[in-house]
Image 1 (cartoon, helix red, strand yellow):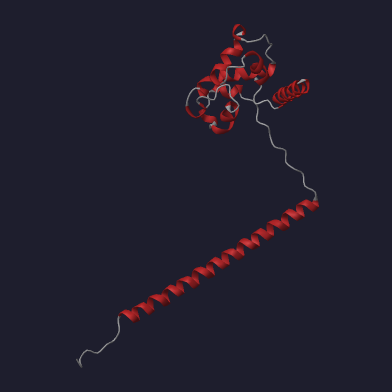
Image 2 (spheres, rainbow, N blue to C red):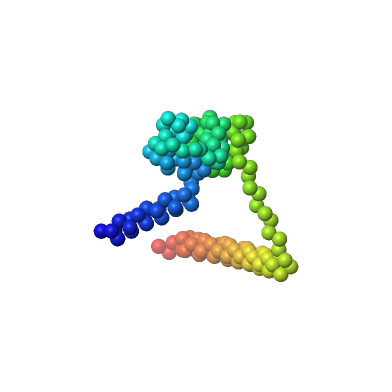
Length: 180
């Protein structure tokens, strides 16, 4: 029995550690402690009001930024494409990628996190040569496919002409009925 209890405790400990490591949004740790039974639109009001907390907790800076973002973008999160996504894992994704930037309110645009720019990979000469070789091979293959397609379409059109001329011959025989 003691080993079962220890194993269960270890499983719970691992679960809570993983839950902390794999945060879905910046307020997940606070939500798990302060508002474990709230989610989505009800999570924000719960986290903002310490009287509603299940256990006392201090809101982290990242979580406060997340809450402020939802205040600034409330009109975008309460209607349209992002409706119902307030205080969820997909809220920022919806605001930054699913919506057109022109559809966001100016307050929301100002509150959004800055987009991370992808760094351009610097290629050495060997990598550039390999990339160029692959590009030429793809272009050559595409050209060969185009030529084959043209040949196939030409041969299929000539086959159709041959079939249609055979049908005409078969359907319109030159019979002489004068002897009947």
